[in-house]
Length: 410
Image: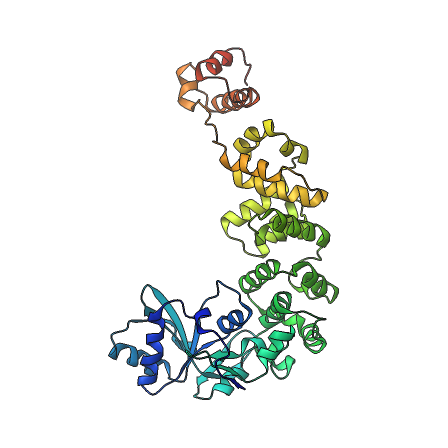
């Protein structure tokens, strides 16, 4: 259960100031440990994790201890036992040990405890129930370290019980399997997920969306989505995905070219929706305004791949649709066509480095030549803008105004 000096503490500690908190808690009769994802990821050598800590002090005792030592705290989730402790320029989240009193599949009523194993027992997966102190000693109550080493992802205790405490754990199970799983998926856990999949309908779409986006960014996203679909779990969230192979191509393309990955782009590749489905999906997933606009625009604008492969066409595409759209649409088109190109980075660099031209005419310029009807002003500006674009953005303001006299605009 206890593995002495098992973890290099430098993989967890980012600042010596963080060690001060351990001393403060100990001085006030408590114990402080790193917990969960921070320990798990440090054991696997994964960087970029958020630090989470646990203590056997109650939230009030922790706040009092910090105040006596001149350390500021902020309320983050006092109801659930989490206190934000300000160390330097960072806020460390410290949660008091808890046990569940009542759960409904979405929320839990908790009470505080001083029993570390009891706190571990309420966590979802064995690999997420590992603790470490400031000396690198690891406390493992459910063989999480062994499971992590062997690539086994399983629930603590009874899988059905863990899932019915919070149905989001179904999606979390698949996410962590995609990250850490090595062999076949744990059958006992999978069967419990299938049995309780309808519970996903009780969750807020925001929680589902965030977890789905995380799954899409995992190493085995395609394999995991396929397992979820084959077992009718994905269908409780979204329509059946028809384009797993497209997603696979996109993931490999982005990795090969070292292009930043994007969960929204991966979701689009998975479904290749038309404009109507894209709008429905965006609304169902409650995407924010920018995400929704991007998602729908990818479906709405039907641009042939060949348009992007001709460098001379790029300024027009960038002007009409924007740089970000052009990069995303290019990658999606390559995925849909299952096509690799040698100069992909050159095209993307050309798009990103391009200065977007500015149309030289305004409505007031049209009014100045004697046209005051607002509808005619708008129509004439559109006609002139088309001429300007087709000229390769070379026509000057004066040249455009001269051409306006020969245009018959209703």
